[in-house]
Amino acid sequence: MKVTIISASTRILRRSHSVALFLKNQIELRGHFAEILDLAAYQFPVFDEVLAKQPDPSPALLEFSHKIRHSDAVLFISPEYNGSYTSALKNAVDYLKDQEFAQKVIGSVSVSAGMLGGIRAALNMQELALAVGGFVLPQMLLVSEVGKRFSETGGLLDQGFQPKVDVFLDAFLWISEAVVEKKHRTEVHFSAKTA
Image 1 (cartoon, rainbow, N blue to C red):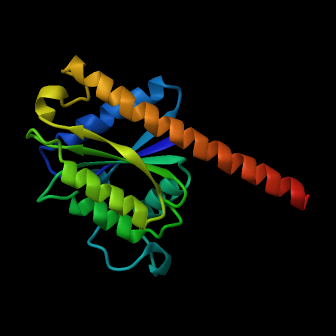
Image 2: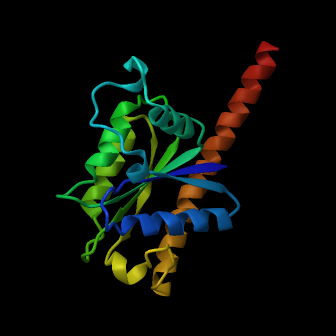
């Protein structure tokens, strides 16, 4: 199974990207492929029109769309800014239509320097996932005091946080695998009927 991780902070001193690096490793340890799409690297301009109506779409936007379209499940990872997720995440998602995200499990991971872990951002990311036709994972991973829990390179500093990661990823991967299996069975059944 292929999981796409959208790392949604574009700030210079961001800490949420370390969580993306850690989760990529954790997913791969569970036997799946994971890829981080770093919005800081893509540097999309401010949204003006959806990809399908762009007269001359940028190669970066086409690549971003292609990678999400060909993933099996998606993780949104964002710090909480002013009670929500980053404008970079909204900007990137707005370029795409629901066909890239439709019928994929989408999990929400929020990050904060404070004690609450960015719960408002996580709840808003769940609403975003619904809006683009995704299957929303009910569980959220809230990373409070991120500087105490993760190193800048994605190492886990607080081993007591591992069980929360395990519960979240177990649920995310279980539901994602079930959806992928159902899609596969439906495609095989449809192909057999039309052959």
